Amino acid sequence: MKLSQLRAVVAVAERGNFSEAALELQLSQPAISHAIATLEEELGVPLFARGRHGAVLTPAGDRILYHARQALQSLEMMQREADSYKGLHGGHIRIASFRSVATHLLPKAIAKFHNQFPEVAITIIECLSFTEVEQCLREGRADLGITYLPTGDEFETWEILRDEYVALLPPEAKIKGSKITWEDIAAYSPVLLACLPCGRPLHNHMKKVAPFMQTSADIQEDSTVVSLVHQGLRAAILPRLAAVPIPKEVQVYSLPVPIERVMAVAMLSNALHVPAVFTFLEMLKKFDFYTLVKANY
Image (cartoon, rainbow, N blue to C red; front, side):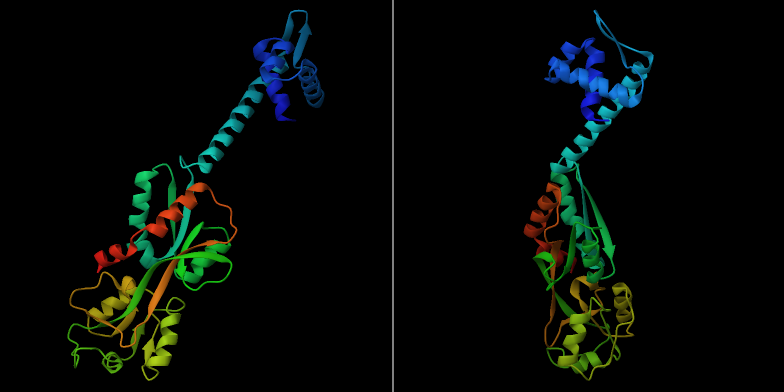
């Protein structure tokens, strides 16, 4: 069964004869006759009674006409849905991110985009780590993802933010001198670090610059780590954005040897996306994340 056959049935039924239906569809009369005849053969019932006064629907044809119109209407709706995704009057963007960015940064960016394109839906997929973000992209469960640089060649990436790791010390901690030392931090052994795999760059860094320090990375929730520091039980080293909101009593220091995580928006190379995804991507690349981060400190 072909669309041309369904269109021919509707046109002949509405016009009452084959010649006018042919004019409406911009086809020859033999083409219309052939479309109707082949459909009648496929269905095994006559759809029209032909005569000198034109074509009149048979009882079977009357019922078939109803379904033909329904089918054409559904196809039209399918095309409208597809057209909405091709433009910015609809569509759906899925962005995967780890918690700190999903909590503190993305909502503001999404709100700005929504003000301009309110018909485009955006879903945040919260992930435990950047490795889970990248897996979401590989599996097609997300269109865009927030990850760390560097990444593999399978992704296209654009840097959006650099976030420094900071030392968090309990409120009563006493620091000698104007700058913190690794020994000051190590006094609260074991020092809590960001959990793996998100904290892997930090763990490698600590092995190089402070191999003597006893550390622990067995707590996944950053808010729990900050709470332990606030209660005077531990010191911690976390990305600044992951630590916020930081209680005002907690002491925050830059590390003796600095390290930062470089965050980027990523998409799978050569992936096909609707225009709304690329428009949102362009906005993310220009968004002032640094000002937003400072507002959270």
